[in-house]
Length: 474
Image (cartoon, rainbow, N blue to C red; front, side, top):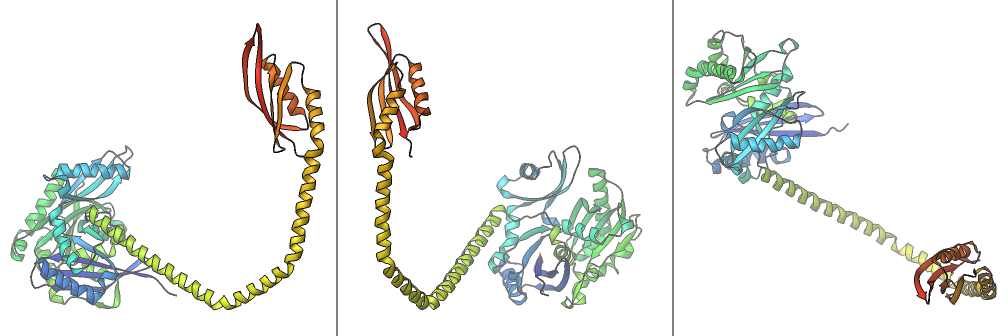
């Protein structure tokens, strides 16, 4: 049976190094089928776009959904409590809060958020990601030049917390832990509890040696800042992930240093893979972390934060709509051409059938004309029977029913159907009594007063009236 597969391409760029993870989603399960690390000539937009174009051509990137990782150190992350549980209201509040959190004009700030939870008092806890527009546009520029449309600009902190919760054992639930993703020169630290991202911090070191010297200090600083600012639950475990050299270098030194259990998890070993999968060589895995691209690829459906500017999203939606419209027009033309082909194929047979029908009509035409003449004569006779012979009966009926208080001056029938009665009465009530009398008659229907006005002659008041009605059709 044919199964529809969706492909996700996740990019991460660190200076001149481009990382690409491609995950194939089959039904609800994901499989890694490619993990690439390729260096550009340098870190300029021109060089990066050239390498991206090559990757897109070689690995069919443009036919997949594309996600770009936003490094944690390039964004400001805030935990907020907002007085609403309505999505539209929260979105408006987020825009207002964004301009308060950074010293930039509102149009220079790009924001994205994730709702962590809601309470019974009508408040929502959210994690807000903020970045300067210039930084976001700079990240997207190489992809625009390479002709790659980015669908989501995602925060790796969100994906990493989703990844850990998905693999968390039952006995680990309820505990707070610090998940440290260790790269070549970048240390991302995320404090999470049951999938809730409580706090996140990132440090970009000068060099790998500088990182090795200061890592323990920065981890301690993160735990201290978390407790000081948020007063959250105590961290009970340190989970290390990222480059594999951590197991030999940093992990032994960190064990016991913070006073909490320390473990290393290799995300690449844990994720499901296709039988044939492209992977970087061991030397690259030793010095670089692929946690961000892997966690984003396998947890893309749970992502909420998107830092792509709104106007860029709208342009892409418009582009998709135009493409769909063009495709619809093409399909419609194909249908029309198909119908035209079928019609052409049957045209000769239809013409022959029409000729036979016309011959039958011409043969029956004299008989039809006779029937039409008979119908007209019948109609004239019926009309005469209805109206011509009944005029005296109508007048007799009318004058037999006119009250003594009513004087008629005009009685006119238009088109043998509409009647007009005009006259005078001693009072307005007499007019309405006359209307009731007419309605009771079998000759009149739809009786209405067109007007009834009072005037005085001498010392006597009279009412002029005009009544219209229809003759009943017998």
